[in-house]
Every structure is written in C-alpha cells, then in structure tokens.
Image 1 (cartoon, rainbow, N blue to C red):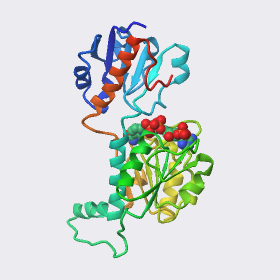
Image 2: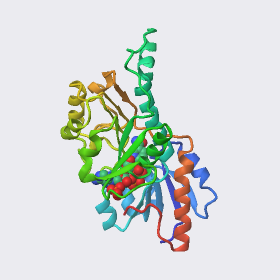
Image 3: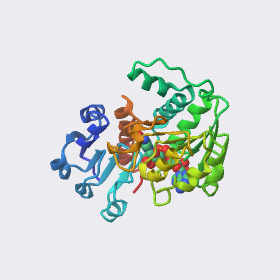
Image 4: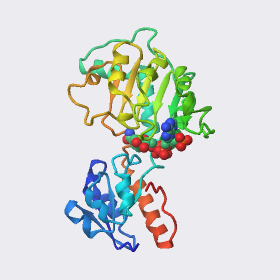
Amino acid sequence: FELERLGIHDSVAMVFPPAELAEYLADLPVEVAVIGDDEISACDAVVTMEHRDAFLEVEWVHSIQAGVDRFPFDEFEANDVILTNSTGIHDRTVGETVAGYLLMFARRLHDHVANQQDRRWERPEWDAAFTLAGSTACVVGTGTLGTGAAETLGGLGLRVTGVRRSGDHVPGFDEVYSNDRLLEAISGADFVIVTVPLTDETRHLFDADAFDAMRDDAYFVNVSRGPVVDEPALIDALEADALAGAALDVFEEEPLPEESPLWGMDEVIVSPHCAAYTRDYFRDTGDIVRENVDRLADGAAFRNRVV
Ligand code: NDP
C-alpha cells in the first residue's frame, strides 16, 4: 500500500506525549500528525496505545505496547489490516524494574518505605534480610522481557532458570525448561517471574496448583498481563502464607480496584502497569515505526508483524 499519512493516536498519551513521537518521526517522507478518533479515517497507518473499531479502515496499525491481546486479530485479518507491536524494546526497562522488586524484598527496602510514612524507626527481624546473590529466579517466558530480567538478575548473582514452549536454550539463562515442566521449574525457585504474553494458553496459567507448587518462602512477580494469573487464587495463597509475597505491575482489572486486598498487604508491592516506562519510550517505539516505514518503501516484510 501507499503510505501518505501516519497518525499518532492520542491514546499514546498514557505512556508519553504524542507530540514527542510526531516530532521524532517528522523527517519521514510521509505526513505525520497527532490525531484523535475523528481523524483516523484520514490516515493510512496509525500508531496507538488503545484499539478503535475505525482502525479496521486503515492499512497498518502499530501498537506502542508489546502486548496486543486487546486487538481483535480476526477482524484485522478479515479487513486486511496489518498489526505490528513493540516487542524487542522492553528488556532493560522491565529487567531493572524486576531487579528493583527483588532487591526491595531481599533487602527489606519496602518495609523501610512503609515505616517512614509513620516516622517509625524499626529494624527488620535478624533473619528477614538476605542477598540476591545465591538466590534462584525462575522466569516464565524467555522473550524480550524474560531475557532482560535474566540478564539483569544474572548480573546480581542470581541463578536464573527459564520456561518457554520449546524448552530450547536461551542466552542469559542457566537452564531452560519446556512449559509442560512448569510446576517442576517453579518449585525450587526463591522468585518466580512471569513474562509471557496473554494468550488462550497462558490465561490463568498461574492458578492454585501453580501457587501450591511454589515454595512457601518464595516471591511471585507478574509484569506480563493480569489475566495470566488467577488473582483470587493468588490472594488466597498470600493470605494463607503459602507464598512470602508478590510484586505486581498488572492486574485482572486495571486500575486495581480500591477494595482489592492486595493494596493493604505488607509483602505485596503494587505498581500501576508501568514496568516498561522510560523517558526514551517514544524513541524506542519510534525506531520500530521508522524501520517499518523504510521496509514498506523497500517492499520488505514488516518487523514485529503480528497480523
Ligand atoms: P516476546 O514475544 O519477546 O516473548 C514472549 C515469550 O513467551 C517467548 O519467550 C515465548 O517463548 C514465551 N511463551 C509464549 N507462550 C508461552 C507459554 N504458553 N508458556 C511458556 N512460555 C511461553 O514478548 P515480550 O517479552 O516483548 O513481552 C511479553 C509480554 O509482556 C507482552 O505480551 C505483554 O503482555 C507483556 N508486557 C508488559 C509490560 C509492562 O509494562 N508490564 C511491558 C511490555 C510487555 P516460546 O515461543 O518458546 O514459547
């Protein structure tokens, strides 16, 4: 198709100012403009955060997120709309966020932040703190996020295992399991970190059986998508002390409802779906868009094509 007008949908404002990306891409040989819902039909392609039905009329939609579970793949396919995503850019950001959660738990930093709110000078129990060096983490999903987490945690001295469908080795991991051995893989780890996409196969992958398989003193981290976890089963496990704690960036319902018990748990860290945030986000995602505009001009296949 002929690309003449590329719209930056204003829903990207949830992650960065749309004008920053429009300016970053201003030197492309096509018109680039920030658009609202009423201007979608005037574009050949759109860069977006959210889905709109009007996207079925354009030629190409690029998601600024790696997770594209909110887009209706069948309808895109039926309408010949290309969908690309932003996988490949979130390795360092999410890897460092995950390392941060683990450091908070191991070094008890979250307790100090909580105590500081009450001006309370209170040292941890003598046996509460430990070091990450010598601990083990099992990362479920060995793609961009998983590899970023493995490399960052490996640098801190953890032993890192991975789980993926094929079970094939991935650089940065000490050992990789196939997903039919998930329960075995997570059973020995001090930390279990979820980095899989949300698919029919991964919905509620972490259920009561998975939390049962984990050690009672293990921490659970979810930076993928809320529905990968059966949230009531996680809450039950935390309340029963069948897990040591959890760091959660994503939830079955977002924003996390005010009445969720997760907000009030001492050993739970809640972050508002921002594990990948960085002031470079518009540049990172813009580089994928730029590459695909070039590829389109050369008649080459798109990078990160999902549909
Ligand atoms: P990738 O496609 O790079 O990696 C996905 C990995 O998951 C692959 O290693 C794949 O390996 C594995 N996988 C897929 N299905 C299964 C399964 N059933 N069981 C076990 N492993 C599986 O994606 P990204 O790393 O870029 O992103 C992953 C997800 O993280 C996104 O889809 C998104 O939902 C979420 N995300 C969240 C962010 C946040 O802000 N919290 C930021 C960015 C992404 P294999 O093919 O061998 O199975």
